[in-house]
Amino acid sequence: MAFYRKVQMKINNKWYPQSTLVGNPISTAQIAKRLAAESTVAPADVRAVLEALSGVMGDYMAQGRSVKLDGIGSFYFQASATGNGVEAAEKVSANQINGVKVVFRPETSYRKQGGKRHAIRALSDVDIEWIDVATLGPNAVINEEPGGEEPGGEEPNGGETPVGGETPSGGETPGGNGGDDPFAG
Image (cartoon, rainbow, N blue to C red; front, side):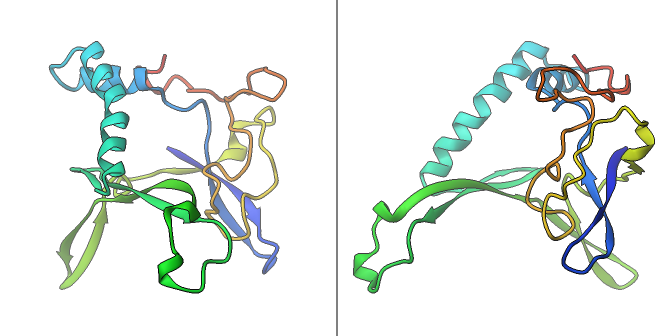
């Protein structure tokens, strides 16, 4: 199940559902335990591979390549530049680059359905049961500030304190794993 909250947008004063995160992020150790349980590989070996993955991917992307993980998608670096640009192509240089981000594009496959071609995106082509985060009860800590002006804004959790996460004072908010994941640590 995934959670949403009700957000009123300032731009049109209308209400929208906005996805929200609950609990703590799933750790590498949890992913390793689950992958080991679904395969014949030991948890320590899975974890070692997962920990090496980011360095290997970073090396390839630093060579100007994209990295495609079958069934997941592609990753690549995208540079950002400072200032307002320059007047001539001859003046463009790497010195203008002040940042880099990793772009992720989910793998897309296509299938015909009813005579039409439908895109199927990896990681998001699953059945999701959406639940209003308000149903978690009055003790759930949620920031009511929207993450952006449009539904599904740039911030991954809409800017709120995740339920089951750590509060600024260091305490735990209610919610957590809820006991649904036997691999949660």
